[in-house]
Picture 1 (tube, rainbow, N blue to C red):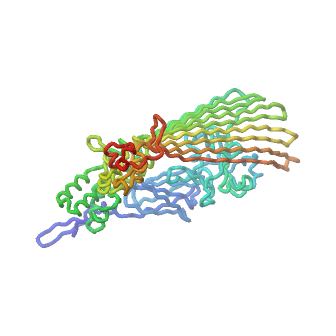
Picture 2: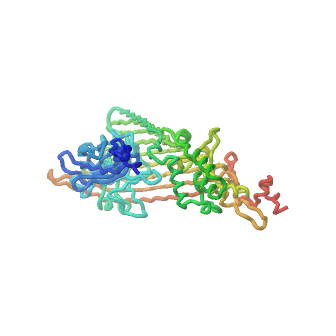
Length: 627
């Protein structure tokens, strides 16, 4: 009766003597949930309302916001607890809490590098002084960007601009929202304008001179309905008169191998104990899975064998004991994961004279993912020229070319790793692959294989090694313009823009991959005329091609009058016409029975029965149904 209590006891004659066991008491206290409380203040001691608090004691982070007095609280059953507090305009603060009794008063310091109020507002059509702009806007300076040039654009904008939030989508992509989303189906990403025109080709962060975020209805008044989610205006660097300036920036970032043990998932023994409890309570029985394709884990398979009386209790416990001693973590680490490495190199040269300015840049980036078989490379070349043909005329050109390519391993590898039971090994001691039937009934699979179906088992290592997925993309953007100085304060600009992006995804599925086997099985059926099972598509490699093409053309003619009268009256007027057109098309193609060397395929296999295929009669004319 004292087994689970923090006490120890002894018998003295007919008396039971009980006393508190301090060691057990400490363990019991740590195993129970305790409330951690704290408060967040600013430099003046004022409470920080709505600050974001992220906390973790097991590797998984949870998020909450501080209350009206800057207070926060959350439960925890283990210590220490790591917390991170962030708030727009303030430096992030990380903190470790050793126990629930700690006094947690956390002060955030202002981040003076984030510029919330900028002197110049760039709208894409014109540059205005802050006091002359009626809309809400925020911006980031070049100095702030250069200090973080090893990050992507969305990472730079994260927590840097009030009202701009970044999210990670389920497929790992970044989603930016200005003052929340404004549409359920049309997307939430803001319009991105580069050097005066919307663009899908992003400049390198080392080339960015200024970023302005337009937030309210004034953005829609300038850019129309496409600015419903806000506008991010990017201005790139241009050449300046003077000696040539050469700039190089190189970054190498190495991330540790993904550590799934940080998830603190249940061990093999714990999972088996849980499934045994399910079996004892009648939630697991062989009848649920018999004669169905529903899959189950290895331990449930053992319980099913025992339930059918195929094995006795001693054999069941022996098998479960062997299973409880397995752990696939080391195989997952060694066979599927690796360190993630990102390297980035940027080189530019700029300069000019009173008449001619130039800027040329080259960027190369390579990204090795933390999962084996996946990597991406990209290059970006830019050239911007400006030639003052006369005192009243300037010619401009702005050309960017982007090329990217990469390889991808088996899709959803990380989520498939998380779905593995801890005792599901990837290889045996001899290095032979062990298939996983968690998604398909092993007994039903064996029965179907006897009829001519293909194996429905999955092995992540085999599929990842067989994966042959490649992507390529090319984009070019050109802007040609002329600036006319007609009179004092009055300018005329003419611009022509052409942008084109081509993307291609090529996935070649080996005939031994799970994807191909599953596809062929779906098109295998019993033919009454033959009295046997027939594969209605050829059993071979499968090629999937996916391509997208996007074109954007625009023309702008704009008059801009800007002048100051009597040293205190400022006037800025623009008038013009802007015509643009965007064309997008794409396509998907699947080729069955594909031969990569000959680049040939079979549209469809004629109805050759499985029985004749087993006898080697692959030619449909030799099938028993035709003989």
